[in-house]
Image (cartoon, rainbow, N blue to C red; front, side, top):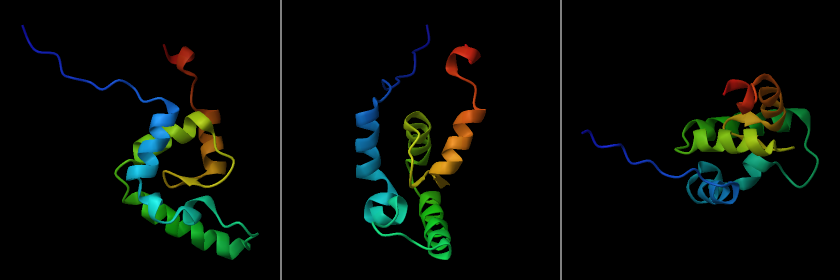
Length: 101
């Protein structure tokens, strides 16, 4: 008889967000990923998003971040190296879980 691998129970949204805030690279500069409190110009936004994408590329919890963003569909920010707009487009192209099962 072979041993079954140990698996962790899935995280709920609050726990996932807690892990992202504790381990995610974005924890060092949240404004970089969330955007400033003031209006920003197109070039300023493009530069900020590019740097945020680079930071996301080094993040150990990027897959969890993407799963979280696909679930909550944020209106703003950079999540797993994707803008909220890009996340919105992804959620429209992915099949619903019920359609896959």
